[in-house]
View 1 (spheres, rainbow, N blue to C red):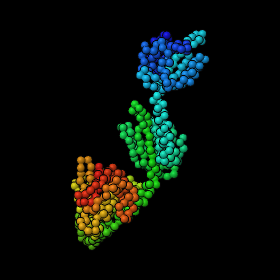
View 2: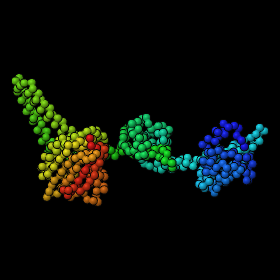
View 3: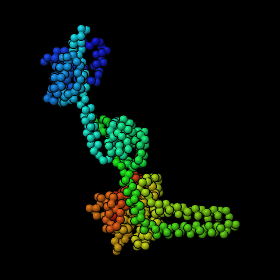
Length: 474
């Protein structure tokens, strides 16, 4: 058979879909193939010369739907078009799922002379749809929220838990783009997309402003890919941390109360010194206001301001770092930070007959001073309480710069952390102390993580525990 003209032939030859033209005689061994395009050759592995004159039945096999094939013959005999899908077999014997549309071709008198079949391999498409249905079924059973997005960022599935979390119906979400959504900052979405397209995963905690009030959630996202490793979408797990954060905030306050004994005596002493200095300086200036030269007055006032700065730092240290706050990470020079911190705790350590050694190299870290203060206070409190009543009682703090991080190491001469307990040391409500909330190290780990750092535990050269806090070097 010849196609109407060269343009039509070229058009059909270059179609991605398979095109097959057969004779109209449906009786076996017909219908005989008279034309196939390149799309057919690519789909089946057969060359045109291999199939011309043969029946399309050659593509059928054990898994081909026989009832559907009977219906196909019946509809074509009645002059109707046909559309459906079934299993066919490539030249190498591999199965593929084909969807095809068959249309009778008629001559000028209306007689059917040939059949035109346009076929499409939908194996991967149906597998993707099947996997998506399975994923949606699995996600619907989760107690945490879940979203499935297509590659363009449009929401394709939102499970029941997420809809309840956001106080919305599924139809309020489906089809919408996550970018620009009123619940999520577009900058967070952009960061997540960059991470996912780079082949990694994405995890971040953020606050959502929903109708029932602010909710704190942890979002974890992973890319979805087909068998060819092409990106098809993204799946997001959204865990509601609101109640957990509230409990952590309460535990943080309890933890701060437990540690208060290590700073009260030091603060009483440290507040008294600058206040006395300020009072003395102002008294001198007042008594000599008519005789002092301007430069001398300024020197006294500069001294007063310096002492006020000390008081401000002490008052800031008294302000507990709440778990609902986010650390404000900035460059922090470690040596002066540790010097101020030592002034708060040394007196209490001396009263407890505990040796305290604090050393710092010339280094800086990306950190929040108040959060790091909380971290060190927790670690020193635990170290001091772990020390034996007799023998060496020593706590040592050392800050130094490594290749890419600034490390703060806190170690003690106590008994150390039992190996059996070490794996769950940072879990909430775990403690080896007779008294305590068991939240100190859980809070410590969380604060360190929020500053982009890590914390690990080992054995100290002093014989006890050794905690290393590693922060990004600045």
